[in-house]
Image (cartoon, rainbow, N blue to C red; front, side, top):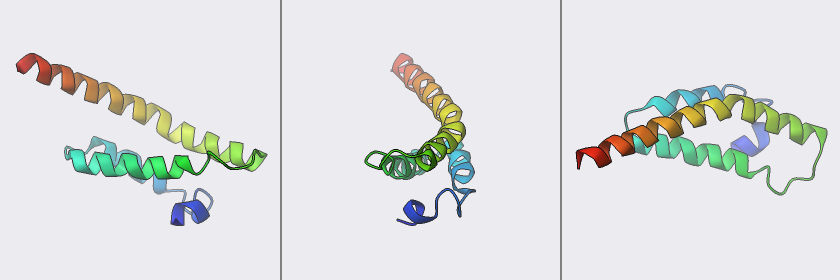
Length: 86
C-alpha cells in the first residue's frame, strides 16, 4: 500500500534495497523480496497510460531487469547442480 502511494517519488531507495536481498542465502528472504517486487509491478497493470506511468515503469525496469536475470540464472544453475547430485 505504501509503495502504491510513495513509490518511486518518495521512496527511491526501495528497489536498491530489494535488489541487495536477491543475494540472500535464505530462500524465504528471496521469496519475500520477489513477492514485494510483484506487488510493486502489479500496480501498473490497470493504470491508464500516461507519460508518468511510462516513466515509473522505465524506472523499475532499469533497476530490476538485470538483477532479476542474474537471480534467474543463479537459481537455474543451483537447480541443475542439485539435479546432478541426486
